[in-house]
Image (cartoon, rainbow, N blue to C red; front, side, top):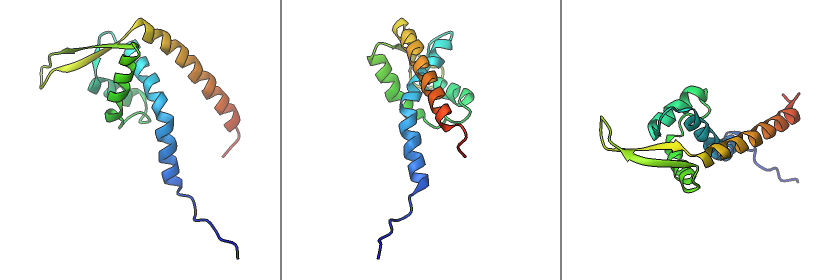
Length: 126
């Protein structure tokens, strides 16, 4: 008698895949948003911008933004300052640095090359 393994949990695997995929993509998207901004932005503004332009793919990740913002600042890709808020406590505002713009160019090129390669491999799959 051959033991059968339980059926895979496709939903759990999808959630894990999306979580792993989004970790680097969020950093790239944050740099892109801040590179287009005419002025420094605070976390909630960044999250709303990602929701608007990300067609839902990057939405719902507001709590995940703050560690990524801190990591990008630690790498000198972002700079921040605390400023007053019209409603509530002071806010931390982020802006992209020159090093962040350089990283964005490199990461965007790597993203496009990866995306194109994966698209080629996936072509014709259901």
